[in-house]
Every structure is written in structure tokens, then in C-alpha cells.
Length: 328
Image 1 (spheres, one colour):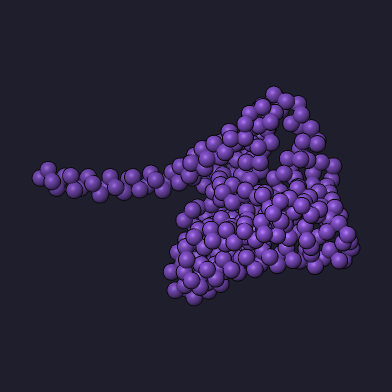
Image 2: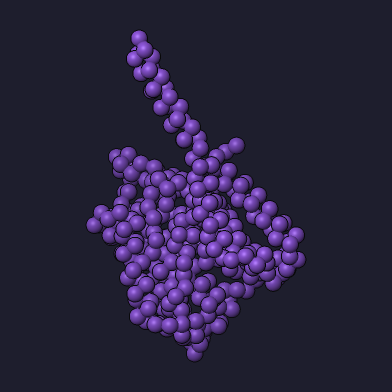
């Protein structure tokens, strides 16, 4: 089996199996209302996780994405107010995207310009964004325009239009990643930046673009988070670690150079599904956190098993001749 398809198959089985188990215990799970809520609930994590997958592809992390999403929600309470309508909403929407671009460029400057490790740089950005959000809104207040939130949750029956768009985006992004020269270039920078630079690639620009794209997708996810809470809350947004978990479960390598947008989408949906089914079983949310941690470890062992086996065999081939010489 193609190793790139293993996460897709595994996640597909897990999603269906959990759905069947939940439906067997509660007929409410497959109701149109709950399925619609599940799809909408998964949107913020799906979008930000695909951004995180881009950062992982070049061998980096971005732990500031959750704080950025929170900042976008707070900003929306100022720029997308209930009294605004029509074309006047456009500048407010662009402000959120601009916030994502600015954050991505700032992270890229810290990582490429100052040569800070990505996890350290984005951890600093996370603190700045969290502080700014609390400074602007010390507690949840400021209603967000319902025209915008209503447009985001529109759908065909119980399937949101935004979810269909995101699935199409993930499929096209995977085709781009594995079947185009630019996609190959992005992966090669993550696999071996030095060799890519020797081949004439602008590795710095690729990494800058990756972190900007990561932040822009996080700001887009912020739109759906705003539609979920509909108020400028500075205390929401916990998708940082979950976005990394979803990208890894979807097939991304922590070392860079590997990943799948479709796999990330399925993983983010599965993590959201876990949160969605727990109330039906009257189980605490802490179980979801433990399940996510266990799944990450399982995925790392499963996806990296060929490398682990080969490494073990290589060590044996090295040790055995040395043992034979010592015996002689």
C-alpha cells in the first residue's frame, strides 16, 4: 500500500467506526441538526490545521495560530459590528486577513531574519497576541455582525457550503503538492533545505511563504470561530496543539517534507467528532484530550515504522560484524 494513503485509510475507518458506535448508543448523533453542528464545529480546526500542515512541510511549527484566531475574533467585534452592512463589511473582513498576513510575516522575520527556532519564535508571538486580545477585550463583549456569521454557516440542507469548499481545496492542494514542481519544491525544502539551496531554490522565500500561508489560513479559521461564538471573546481558541495533532495524524512528518491536506482534513474532523460524541455518552471532555495524545503517539509509531525497522536493521548490521571480530 502507498504509505501516503495509509493515514487516509486509517482515518476514514476511524471516522466511520466512531460514527457507527455513537449512532448505536444515541439516535441523535446522525440527526441532521447534529451533523450540521459537527461539520460547522470542525471548520475552525480543519482550516487552521491545513495551515499548520504547510508550516510542518518546511520543517517548522506555529504555536501562535490559536492566539491569532482569538485575536481575529476580538478584531471582528470592532470591524464587523452589527451596525455595518453591505460593502462596508469588506474592509472589516480584509482587516482580519491582513492580521494573518502581518502575523505570518512577523513570524517569518523571527525565524529567517533572527534565526530563532520556529517553536520559540511563534511562542513569543502567541504571548503578544494573547496580551493584545485581552487588552482590547478584557471579557467577552462586542457582538459580531450576523450577516457575516449567517453567510458562513449557509449550506445545502445540513451540509455547509464552506465545508464543501474546504474539501475541494484540500483535494486540489494535495494534487498541487505532489504533482507540480512548486509543490515538490515546498516538500524538498522541508526534506533538505541545504540541498535545495544548492539546486538554486529560494529556500528563504519558500519558508516565508509557508508561514504567511499558515497564518492566513488561521485567520480564515478565525472567521468560523467568530461565527461560532458571535461575540468578541478573548478567552477562546485552543487549536494550537490540536492543529499540530491533526497535521501529524494526517500524515505530516515532524522533520518536514511530508504531509497531506486531505489527511489533515480527515484528522481534524475525527478529533472534532471525538468532542462531539462524548456528551452522548455522558463522559468528561478530559477523555478527548487523553484520546488525542494516545492517537498522536500511535500515529507516529505507525507512520514511522518503516524508518524505525530500517534503523534497527542497520544497527544490527553494524553490531554483528563488530561482535564477530571481537570473537576472533
